[in-house]
Length: 171
Image 1 (cartoon, rainbow, N blue to C red):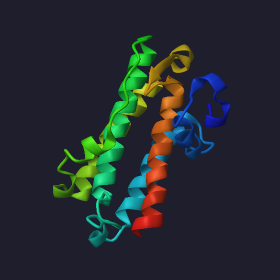
Image 2: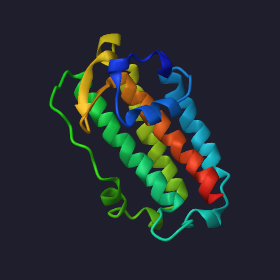
Image 3: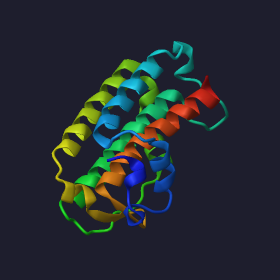
C-alpha cells in the first residue's frame, strides 16, 4: 500500500503534512529505504555542522535526530495500541519538552544513527507482523483520528520533512 491509497477517514489534522511527505513508496519498503537514505545523507554532513544552530533557540542537527527518534517511538507506540484495538484516546506530546530534556549534543553522531537504525528495525518488524485488518484499525491521537498504517507513513514523512529542513537551513 502507498500513502495516496489511504482513505479519507484514516487521518486528519496535522498528520496529513507528513503523509504527503512520505511519497509514493510502499509502506514496508519505504520504512526501510528511507532509513538507509537518511543515514547516508547524515554521514555526508560535515562534522562541524552537527552542533550548528541556524538561529538562537533552534535545535542542532543532533537535537533533530534525537527528535526523530523520540517521535518515531511515540508514533510506533500509538500504532501498537491502535493495532491491538485499544480505543483509549492518546494525548499529544510537547516536542520542546522532550528536546530540552535530552543530552543529544553530548552524543556522537554515530551513536544517534545507531539508535535510530535499531529503532527503525524494531518498527519495521512490528509493521511486518500486522495483518491487513490490524493496519486499518483506527485510534485517536492528539485529538485526531488516525489508522495504524497512516502512522507508518507519518513516521516516514516526519523523517523526510526534517531531512529537507537540514538541506534548507543547516547546509
